[in-house]
Length: 102
Image (tube, rainbow, N blue to C red):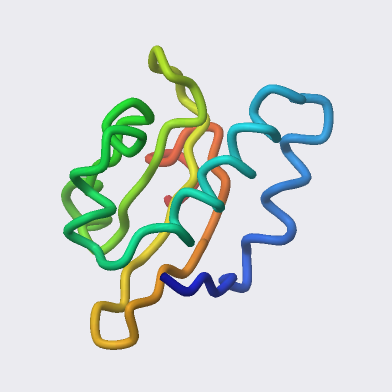
C-alpha cells in the first residue's frame, strides 16, 4: 500500500521528540502499512491487532488509528484510507485524539 502524508503530520511528530520507543513503533507501523496489499489485510493482520487498529467514533469516524503502545495508551497514529487508490494518508500523531481534534 502507498503512504501519503497529511498537512498536520510533520508538525505532529515533533511531539515524539523525546519518546524513543514511540518513534520506533511509528517506523514499524509505517513499514507494516507498506507491506499490506489492501485494507482488509491491513485491518486483520496480527500486527494491526497488537497495535489496536480501530476506526474512530462519532464525528471522527472517517479516521482510523493505531496505538503506539502494545498494551494501550493515549499516543496514536491517526490516518485516513483511500480505497480506490489503495493508499493510507498519515494525518496526525496524537497524544489524546479526541482533544486534539476539537
